Image 1 (cartoon, helix red, strand yellow):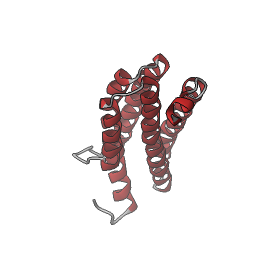
Image 2 (cartoon, one colour):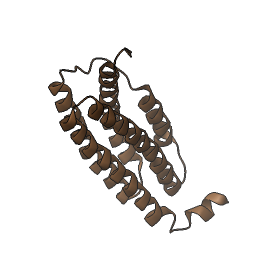
Image 3 (tube, rainbow, N blue to C red):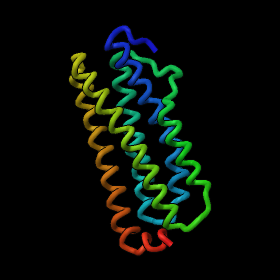
Length: 168
């Protein structure tokens, strides 16, 4: 990683986000298949389509800035998705597993919120205002996804006595 200039840091972070989004696109269908709740399956499938748009926005910004994705691997996302994969492969009560999948997905969303917020500010500081606006759209969509996952958890799992079952 080259940290001699803010532009080199920004470039690296854009490549890191690109890697993260590619990894998420690969993981979301597995998470949807592992979910027992139709609402959660639908949320994961819808977020896959939104994530593909995030990747397209990143690709457009990178083309504009003449940044090639290269072979940067977002290690943070890789770790989060490996933890999620453990949940996908685990047996247990379907509702408890869905709650665990929501938790794993929200950790991914929070990572993305932090990453997009940082890169958006770097873009602003470097005078890439149109790219900052594009990153801001994605940042808000990530926040919306996090809120939707919380809504599903509150409306499905925590209203049906899952906590009583989990405590026993």
